Image (cartoon, rainbow, N blue to C red; front, side, top):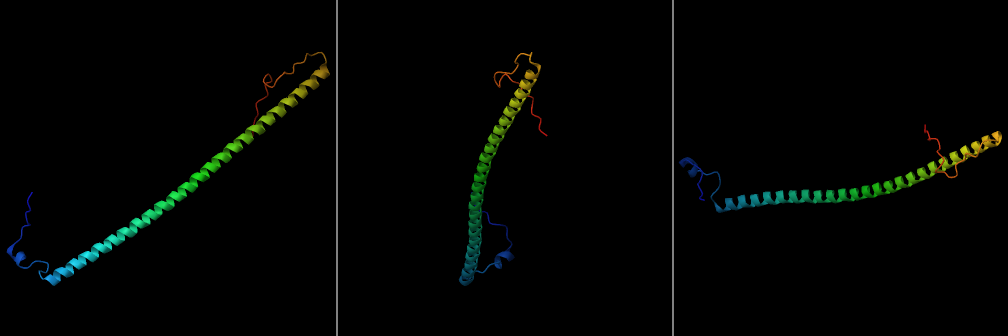
Length: 130
């Protein structure tokens, strides 16, 4: 590869847009250095803020995960409670049905005992919830 300078006319080469004096060059270099330092500082502040925000968001995410886990455990407990209550209700309903059947059998007297011997043989009516 080779460097090809931009096309210039003689007038532009006689009067360049920058100073050729050493003091002028030092001023321009210092100005460029200050501009670069300022840009670097702004980028460093931005990166620091982003790192802090990421850390904060990770902490929030961890808290939310803990909350979700806690709510999941609580939901499972409530499901177990509900299942136990439904089981108790079905057992109560079965006992009442047996009592009604026993009362009917004692009134008729001639009917054989049709009471199921186990809850598995009994077919309780489906529970209709409102």
